[in-house]
Image (cartoon, rainbow, N blue to C red; front, side, top):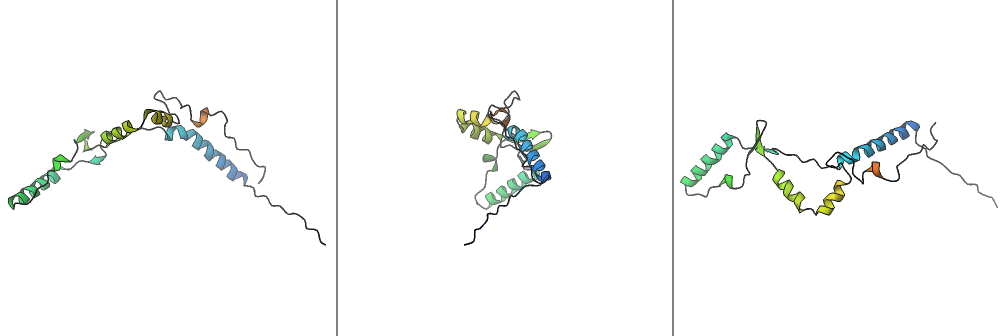
Length: 143
């Protein structure tokens, strides 16, 4: 009866890869509070209709009306045009504010605790404020 031996293999990462991986995790940890901090975009989101486009719609409505066809009132569904730095457009900010106000305050506080506070301090649940810091130990392989 023959006795069999055991064979084991160990996969190790090259040291250059381990260093890059550690740097990537470190960068992600540093960026996490910034990425989870909501910064609203105010100002135009979509370009406003040009005077030529508005005149074209008005001409189309007049032509349709002269033949007894229905017309479209474009001013009824377009929001107020905003002017920011010479650029005219329509802003999504009022809708975003409405959506945010629908989120319960406790849930907003929880989400914001991962990012930066209003004063620029790192939130209480950000990786920098955790009791156990993530440490990657070199495996000793690839050297």
